[in-house]
Length: 603
Image (cartoon, rainbow, N blue to C red; front, side, top):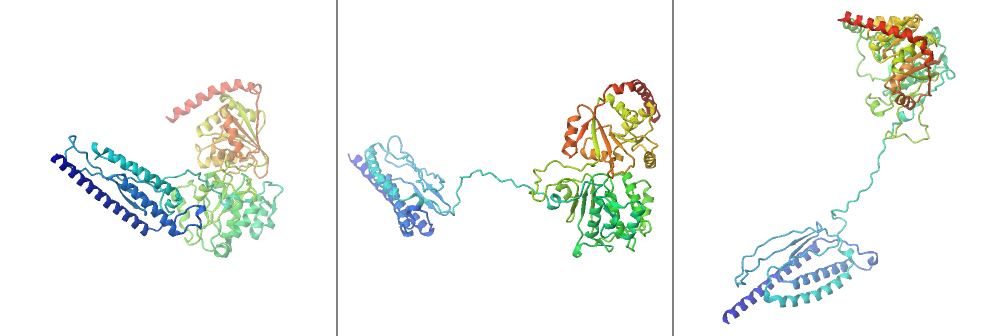
C-alpha cells in the first residue's frame, strides 16, 4: 500500500509540473501574439457592411479577443500543446511541436528520456487558418482515460462557444494586408501579340506612273537640269523623259547634290534614294544625269562616285552611258571589271584618290526587283531613305501594313509584255524552240538556259539542224567574244542567241522581240530579269516559258503571287512538230559524235 500511495503521489507531482510548464508556454504564446500585434499595425478590410461602423480600435479588440479565445482553447485541450509563433511580416505561421516518448510497456514509474522533434508547417495566411495540431499524444496511460474524456467534453463545449463568437468576427478582418506576397493563384492570361509595322518610307512611297507613253515629261520642264545636259539629251534624240526619270532626277538634285557639294537641306546629311521600277523604264539615265551635273563643276580630280553593277556586261553598258554624257567636261570615267590585268586596272586608279572621309556618302539604289523586306534593307545602313516605286502599295488612308501579315513580295512587270507558257515533254523542247523560229517566224530570239553546258549543246544542235543563225553567250567565251556576239545580235546577224543568266541582268539589247525560257527559272527575280530583256521603253514584247508537267503548278503560283498581269497557256499541237522529227532524230546522232570528239580533244 505504501508503494502504491508513493507511486500515486509521484504521479500527481508530475501532472502538476506539466500543468505549470503548459501554463508557462501559454503565457509565452500570449506575449508573442501581443508583441506581433503591437509592432505590425495592419489595416484590414471588413466588408461593405462594416464600412464606417467599426473603428480601428474595435477591429483590433475583436481580433485580440479571438486570439485570446483560441489560446484558452489550446490550454484546455491538453497538457502538451504546441507553441505558436505568428510572424505578420512574412504572412507565415511557424508551428513548433514537441513529441514525448511513450513509457515502457511495464508502466514503470521512472520517466524515460524525451525525444524532441520540430516540424515547421508553412501556411499562407489567407484567412488566418488554425494551425495543424498533433493529436497523437504519446503519454497516454490506461488509468487516465476517464479524466481525459472529461477534459475533452469540457473543451468541446468551450470550443463551440469560441466558434460561435468567431462567427461574429468578419473574415475580412483576418486577411493579410495587400503588401504581403501571396504564393500561388497564378492565372494564365492571353498575351497580346505585338505586330511589327513597316517603316513609313517603305509603306508610303512616292508612286511612279506605270504609263510610260502618256506620262512623259519634256526635258525642258525638269527643274534644276543644266543647259549643257539639255543640249546633250537633244543631240541624242531624247526630247521627253520617262516617268521614273522625271520624278527621280529632281529629287536627287534637291536632296543634296547642289553647287558641287553633297549637303542636304539646312546643311545636314542628304537622304538616300531607293527606286523600284520595271525593266526598260530608264533607270540608268535617272542616276547618270544628276551625278554628271554635280561632278562636272568639281576642280579637284578624286574618286567621288562609285557605281556597283552585278555583271560585267551591265558594267560596260553603264560605263558607256557615263562616258557619253561626260564628254566636254573634265570628268574621267574608268571601269574596273576584271577585263584587264590587275596591274593595268590599278594603274588607271593610281592617280586618283578617294574623297575625304568627312564628306557624307549618299546611296542611290536602283533595281527592278528591289526587296521590300525592311530587315534586309536595314543591313544597307540607309539614312532617312526615300522610296520611289511603281509597285501598287496600300493607299494612305489604310492602316500601315504589318510585317507579320505581309503578303509575298510583288514586282512591277513591263506593261506591254505578253507572257505565255508552253507545256512540253523533255524530248520535245528543242523542237518547240525550232518551231518558234522556223514556223512562227519569231526573230530575233533571246533564249535563256540554266547552265553553260546546256547552252553549248543546244547551240550545237541548232547549228547541226540548219536554217538558223545561232550563237551562244556564256562564260565559255572571253569578255571580248561575248561583246562581239552581242553586237552581231543587235545588228541582226544572229537570229537566235542562247544565253545563261549572264545576259539577264540589266543589259539593254535593242531589237529583242521575243524571250524564250528554255529552262524554267527557279526564282521569281530570275524570271523578271529574263523577260525584262524585251518590251523595253514602252515597246511590245513576247515571253515564252517551256514547262514540264511537274513544273507547271509551282511556276504559275510563283508568277501569279509576284503580280503578273496574267500568263496565258500556249499549246503547240504535235502535228506541227512532226515535219521536223525526222531531221531532228538524225541531228541527235550527229550531235553525239560531235560531243564525243570535243571531249576527246579536251583530254
